[in-house]
Length: 391
Image (tube, rainbow, N blue to C red; front, top):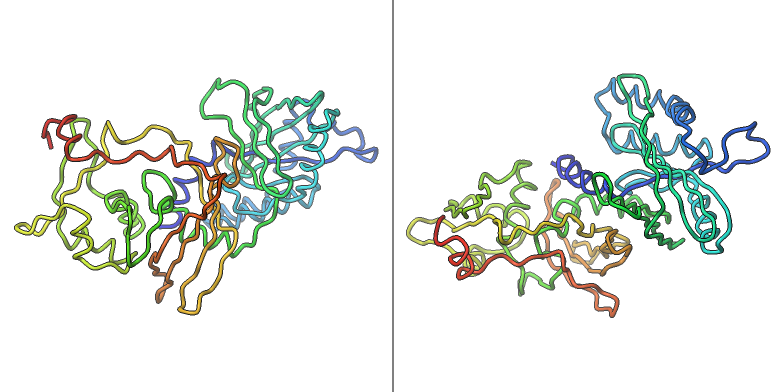
């Protein structure tokens, strides 16, 4: 169930990520200057250097796992390169190379560095960066595996439109034109993060995230659920519970479903300490049929932007009552913000792998952004206006 959620998340984060490279010196024996050209042969040599890890994982059906990615990142790091992964789930190796380059950008001096980001298929994207006069030029190339053979044959060149580097946090950069697929945004964490924080983030935050729901952007608790929208959460929780999509499909003409009460309430009882009466007060429940009305988001309230922040647990506390309080930053590559806002999520671990969400509170700050990516669901009046009762 986790892997499915993370694969979906990877599709979003793969549009954002990048990686780093090796410092040239007099002992390099004539190797290319960092950030110069497209060293396809060098990339293949690097991949052959960790080929044993990739081939062993593929043989054991462990390719695509976080452990394989971590081992590859560390192996590239051992060769003197700065390396990370697409999902920022592994601490960057040799981040000082990136920090040094970033200082040269700020000082408007000439410098070069190569940046590698490993993907869950065992390949990587390579950004060869050069700077002069405060500009950053990029040669982007990629490496993939064809069977047991590494291949590197793609390149793209551009000058960055955005370059933001917090040496104690994230590096963000973005190409100056949107030729080709994706936004061209790169977001890579330089500062190490405790593995426990990442594990808690994967378990409790990433699968729900901030897309098309307000669970982590509004204040609520078990005594007062505030503006929490349960309809927003139904499909998210259904996937988290079953590993499958809810069987209630979007329709351009609008569609209304009647969901049996046992099915609808079960997903909330699994993830919240909430009674049936509270669920019914916050939704539309039909007593006669023992069903809940459910309308998937449609053409007029689906929202179109994939550029939403992603959560990152940066610290946690074990509370006396057995709950965990997680401090979470919303990282927003679109705005080059490693803290678009901060919130505290309290969860209650249960026996086995189960858990319940207890509360969420947004930490007040003048720097907090409004969740402009979130679109409210249509009201009953709006639904009738747009769809004319077609459901």
